[in-house]
Image (cartoon, rainbow over all chains, first blue to last red; front, side):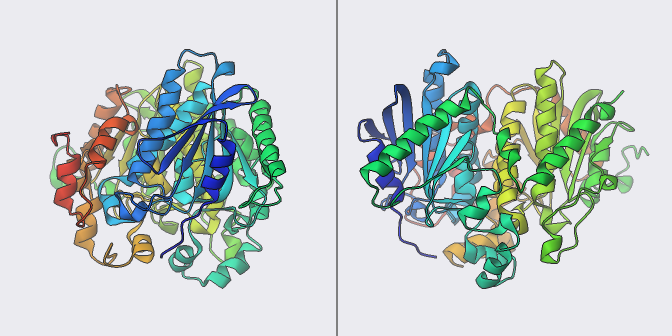
Length: 275
Length: 284
């Protein structure tokens, strides 16, 4: 499946990093902005398309072998640099998310793309657990393994309220084939089964997104849009109040079973201790 | 139930149900399953789609001991919906690991053994499967600082999707020769990239790239496990006794980047090339 590379991520990165120092990460497909957001040091991270990517299956902004490890390097570098900094002064890490998918290819599987993505996940979790506010800003697609590696470990996830913002476990065409349904049938099903849906409104009921930001345009943002997003990012960091967990997601309306299972486990835990 | 060393009496680990696998891994009589089939916490989403749910939603989670050491042991049932993780199945794994983290934070020592036979996210519960996998991953990174998290990957399903990333976070990763480990399932790659990139019908090609032998030769796992239950137990004990590793596989950042940045991608890769690039002996 060929696709046109999305520029949404780069648009928002450039606007938000306007006053920051911008550099490439370990590869050109990773951009890093370093600066301040409302007086607190902060790093912006973006996985972006690179038409010359050494790995041809990762040229449209996919998270591939190099992107996974490059994210791991960038995030773990921030964590180790600030290892002795008090949590309240640790810099924020902001993932700008516009990732169409992980890279699908033979080289990717052969060379352990799962391990590259594990590198990124590990670094993000460690950053969060060390006390860095980790915020994700969804401006485009946030798909599947790519989102697990870049964004899903944030302790706060914000999303532009725009139809081009999409979160899902698998692209619709592939999901249709694997579940042996038509794409239309999938859409029909999604109307009654919220976790299946591709739209943001359904996703909101799952408790994963903290806040939707109403912008006038997601691809040609106005000055007001940019200021609004900046304010929301600052607010998101403030709202964390030192929280290093992702458990608040469980409060989502359609996560009743996730809560029930945890209640039962907790109730049975002590009685299940071996003696 | 001892079968000594007589190979004719050996019980094959992979032929056991998920529940039996957990029981076999644990010290005799120590298994205490939690949220059992009698709790009847089933998937709230499958019935809506005309799929018969299972009373354990395809995950068995228990406390118990291995050689007297306190552990949680969790097995995914590859025979239910391809070992896929939906909301309940995922919450059973994440919730158990979260309680193990809490216990360790409170000074108890509890390690974890995961028996993975999973295709990853259950597409009928798509976003909630993905959400649960993110929660499992977070819990493993927290738990592995205290105690080893040992993952076993067995056939015939293997370990794919988001759960392959989970496997890559564990302290130690053991695999049968028949098992497979990869991010994207063969069908999905063929769908996305075409049959010349990945032929999902070509079994020897697929096992050659993602099977246990190859994953061991490329350093992406720690060790093989045999099919015999007693030997599986011995291996798990061996790795649990190693304790927390000095470095985790997911932290091999620089060496991985150095290797992957040098790969000549003008021609398509073979299993032999992958070994030459990733094997521990390969020069940097």
